[in-house]
Image 1: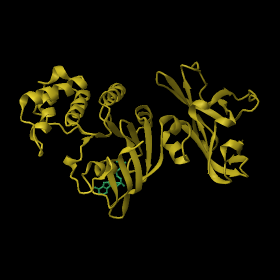
Image 2 (image 1 turned 30 degrees about the vertical axis):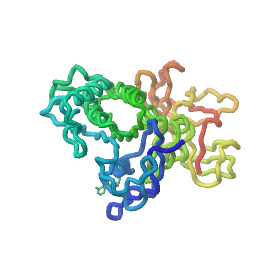
Image 3 (image 1 turned 30 degrees about the horizontal axis):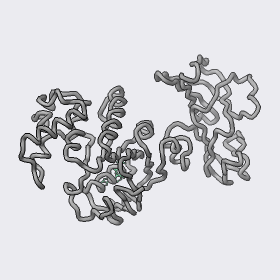
Image 4 (image 1 turned 180 degrees about the vertical axis):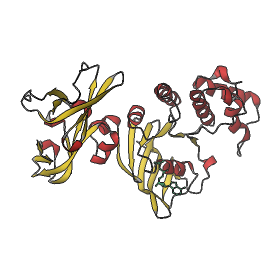
Length: 359
Ligand code: ADP
C-alpha cells in the first residue's frame, strides 16, 4: 500500500526539550488512525507540523509522494479540527461552514448557488441540515463539534487531523460522536488522524493505533494487536488495562515480584533481568482465599477494597503485597457480578499463558 502521507524522521525541539524525536510513520489512503499518548508526548506538535503551522527541525513530510516543506498550511489540502472548535459565535451555522469557501486566499467561491449546495451537503453529512440558520451560541457542544467538522470537510481535504475532538463533550455524547466520526469518514473515504489521550477512544476509533511516548512512536498496529500484544511494558501501562508487577525474570523461567514467583512460558520469550509481569484486568478470576487454585492456575492473595459499576462491566479493586492496587474487570456479558466482602482476603487467579512478560 502506498502512504498518502509519509512522515520521515521528524524531529522538533523547543529549546532543549525534544518534542518529537526522529518520528516516522505512513498514513494510508482511506484509513482512520488514532494517535494515542499521554500529555506532553508530542501529539499536538506532530499535528501542527503535519498541518503546516510549525516547521520540523529535521526530517520531512511527503503528501502523495511530494515534500510539503515550504508549502504553507492553507495549500496542503490538510484539514484541522481543533479542540476548541474555533467557530465564529455571532455567525450562523451555515455561514461558519461557508466562511472558508468564501474567504479563502486561493480561488474563493463566489457562486452563492455552489456555496449553498456544498455547505448543505456537509450539514447533511454531519446531521445539521435543519440548523443552518442557528447562531453558534444557540447550539450544543456536540452540535458545535459537527459544525467544526463540516467547516473543515467542505474544503475537500485529503486528510483530516482531529486534535482531541471529543475531549470537550460529555461521556454520553462522546460515544455517539465516535460512531458518527467513523461513519462520516467511511462515507467520504478520506484519511482521518485522531489524537487522543484516552486509550479506549484510540482503540475504538482507529483502524490502526499509533502509540506516542516522549516524541517517539513505540507501537503502530491494529487495535486488537495493541490491546492483546502491547509491544512493550510502556504501551501496556498506557493502555491502563493491565496489572503490572515489577520485578525480575530469572533464567527466563520464573518471574520474581516481591515474595511471589510466577512461571514464565517458553512462548513468552522472557529475557532474564529486571522487567514487568503483566496480567490484563479481565483475565483474572477471583476465588475465596481458602479455595485451592485450579491445576495450572497461578495468582496472588489480595484484600478487597471497593468496586465500580460501569454498565457493561464491573471493576473490582484489591490490595496486594506492598499496598499494590490490583484491578479485576468482569465483563457482564460473560460473567455475573459478585459481592465480595470489604476487607476480605481473596485469591486472584489467572492462567500463566494469559500473562505478558517484558524485560
Ligand atoms: P501533547 O499534545 O502530547 O500533550 P505537545 O505536543 O503539546 O504534547 O508537547 C510535547 C512537548 O513539547 C511537551 O514537553 C511540551 O511542553 C513541549 N512544547 C509543546 N509546544 C511548545 C511550545 N510552543 N514551546 C515550548 N515547548 C513546547
